[in-house]
Image (cartoon, rainbow, N blue to C red; front, side, top):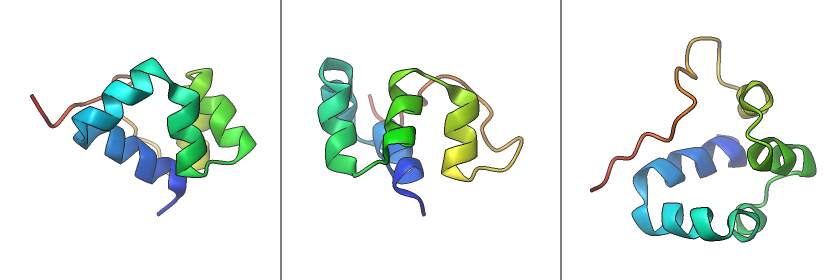
Length: 71
């Protein structure tokens, strides 16, 4: 699994990480070890680039919203 895809999944399942990302996305991205291109895609909310860089197939990236699996 790519580090980008892993980060996206973690943001959707870890409330503390999502809260930290909302406050300081660059710190979370830095710890996740994303490449410069991945970092830019996340910070710019470039969903086309995120889809391409994460390796998700067409249709697997069905939303531009974070789906939260926590309360």
